[in-house]
Length: 123
Length: 123
DNA sequence: TCGAGTGTACTATGTATAATAGGACACACA
DNA sequence: TGTGTGTCCTATTATACATAGTACACTCGA
Image (tube, rainbow over all chains, first blue to last red; front, side):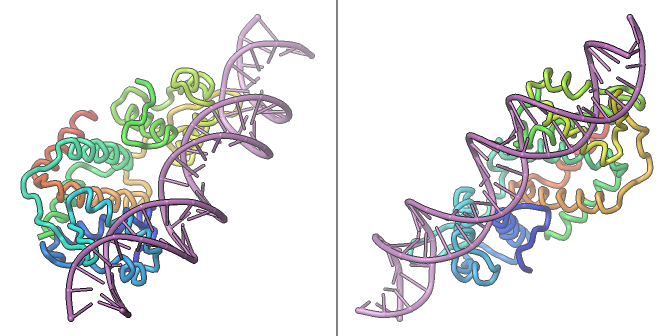
């Protein structure tokens, strides 16, 4: 699964998202080691600095743990709702997006169905 | 309600969103006239070109209708699901956002509650 | 017809972000 | 000691956003 311009997000943001997806879906588990920045850069046809930027962001968000000359590892997941400010911000973005979707004529039921399906897939 | 950097969206995108919100909520109705680009620019402390960009995008999406030396007016709303490609793109963005939200520890029930509330408010 | 108001088009400028490239350094570990 | 690791730095290129200023074509009422 190469990094493409899916959704128009910058590459490093897509990487951040993918790592979180893989954690949520159990593909990556706490303690697992991520590919090195150079290895990941080779795989994804990116510059190592771009990968490093993604890892740095994941580190800031406490998703991964970095050991200097060794590698990066997946941290324990926060089960409890962590950062309230982040939740509020995400909710705001979701509601904006929902305005778009509603304007396109998609009914509430269908959107809710999308949500349910996504959460089931993640288990 | 001035245009701010709510959600970090560019000004013209925020304008586009606001117009759609006001249509969905019935504040703007088909046939209503929008403020001229210069008037809106004065209200929102923006450059007329920025407003024009927003209007142009709304025109492209068939949300408003432009009459050259006269003004811009709200079009009839599409009740049926209009552009499938747009729906697919929006769904993709929603699912990406959902990964974030799920990672933050927000359960499906709560997200669905957000959706329902938003749709009710829109009526 | 005239003029005010309207949308539109164009160029130029400044700022910020994204991504790349290349190089250098410090750390871990066999 | 050497290889692989994360990190940092500067420079460059490309793109998007927003502003500014100017100009043009259109509508419509006076």
